[in-house]
Each structure stands twice: as C-alpha cells, then as structure tokens.
Length: 319
Image 1 (spheres, rainbow, N blue to C red):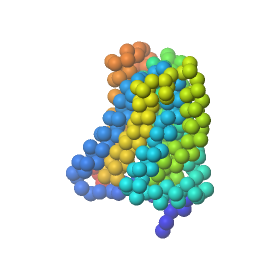
Image 2 (cartoon, rainbow, N blue to C red):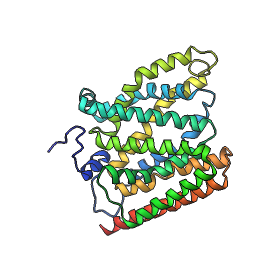
Image 3 (cartoon, rainbow, N blue to C red):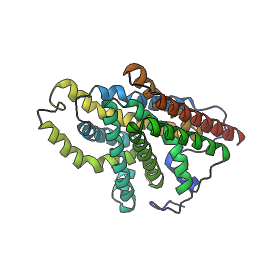
Image 4 (tube, one colour):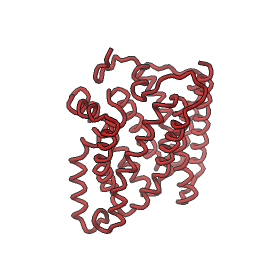
C-alpha cells in the first residue's frame, strides 16, 4: 500500500526503513561498496572544518548562500543520472510533501549557518560535541515521537550523556549553546526527514531550491560589499565558494549509497568518524583549548556512545 504524504500514522518501523532505504539482511558479510561509501561520506564531513577555514574572512551567511547556489545544478545532474527527477518534481508540486520540506530547509540552513560560524570563530570542539550528542538525541526523539522504546542499557547511555552536558554547563556554559543548538537542530531535521516521503537526494534538492531566492539575495548583497571578501574578490575565494556545491552534494550521495547497502546499526557506528575527526582537528591542528569541564563532558559522551554502540551490536547479533 503506498505511503501517505506526511502521514503521522505511518508506523515507526516503516518510517525508518523508508527514510534510509535499508532492508534487513541476513548476510554476515557487509557490502564492501557500502562500507567504502559510508567511510567516504563521514570522512568528507569530518574534514569540513579544513574547507571552511579557507574562507575564514568570508561571512558565514555568504558561504551558505553559495553552498546552496552551487549545490543545486550538481544535485539536478545527480538526480538525472539516477532517474530521480520525477520524484523531485512530484514532491515539489505537492503541498503535503512541500510543507515538510519547508520546515526541514529552515532547520538545515540554520544548522549549516551555525556550524560554519562556529568553525570560523574557533569553536570546532563545540561543534563536534553537538554532533556527538546528535545520535543520543535521535534516540530520545524516537522515543517521544516515533513510539520507540529505550532499554535499560540505552537509558544508562542517555544518563551518562546528560551528566556530561551538566558538567559542561557548570564549567563552560559560554559554548554549550553552540553544541546544543547544532545537536537539536540536526536531530529535529532528521525527525522531519523521517516523516517526509522524499528520498535523500531529491529532498536536499528541494530544500536547496526553496532556499535559492534567499541565497541569491544574500550572494548579491555580499558581492556588492567591497569590505567583505568573497565571490569576485579574488579567484581563489570564488573557486572555493563554488566548490561548496560539491562539498554539499558528494558526501550526501555517498551516504545515500551506503544507507541502501548497510544495516542501520553499522551506519550508526560509522557516523562517529565525522565528529571524531573534527575533535582532533580542533585540538591538534587549530589549537583549541580542551578545558577540564569540556574534557570531562567529552569523556562522558564517549562512554555513552560506547554503551550505545555496544548495545546496538549486541542486538544486531541476536537477530
């Protein structure tokens, strides 16, 4: 039976399967192509701070504007190659689908803007903490909105993460809002995308299409401001800004490929590569201070994620 557009009565199991396009497999051997695609996606996302640091003098809003503008033609080309243009036009012409995309586009753009600002403001550690927290928030949102149940082990993981956030709030409150805003915006974005009956690549194409008028306006505004370096100020900045489309679309395509070929639990474990790389970059490449409260918070978050991952692997093997 076909899915209704945005129907909240769809079962949680169907929503999760539709969103990730993952089918259960009884094979013990993981798909090699899926693993390569998954590692490729999270390696790209992990090294994003290095890319955005090359545009440190460019306002974050201008960077996001060009990221949207240059992603659209590449996404359209990818959809044409994958024969998904029909899904794109069908969804963008249906209000029942488009309303979800409007909300997700708002959350996505806000998350992107805050992330770029955090990276170029020397807050890579705060940003990486947000994405470490994200899978744990996904668990809570799944419990609240998708009818999922937490077992005792998962509650222990959530408790450890909560203590870590409390320690950070007591000792480093000034940057905690960055981590929480990134974690919540991305978690809610993921929840909306679970409910929206649109695939990964067509969904991102619709989101960027909705943001295009604002992105064009912002790009023209900053291009007309000689005090702000960016598009047209020099060839290097222009090339890097245009490359933002590739940086946006390619990891998503790799992720979509991996999600079809790998179990959800495996994808959940691999996703920690991204924020781990960001954490290491922040400490060792960009010399951000790892204060006592921040270190305690990270350790507790890592403990929580280890518990969560162990529980997922244990339950996967029990199937």
